[in-house]
Length: 70
Image (cartoon, rainbow, N blue to C red; front, side):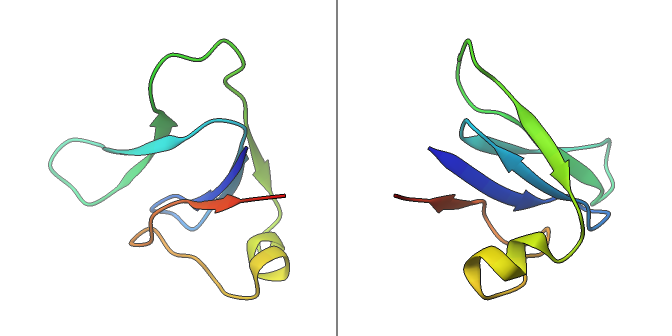
């Protein structure tokens, strides 16, 4: 499985495992962390615009991660 997500600062990520939202303090800023326990947790930052090229729409922090399926 592969998941696509954008953090609160607009940085785009690709992950091999499901992600869950993590807020920083009481602000709306935050990032994504790995959901559950996986031995192969990997998340990579990708250039801005990569997600839109892959799925045909832009993601924001308000959107849930998108799973790419084969």
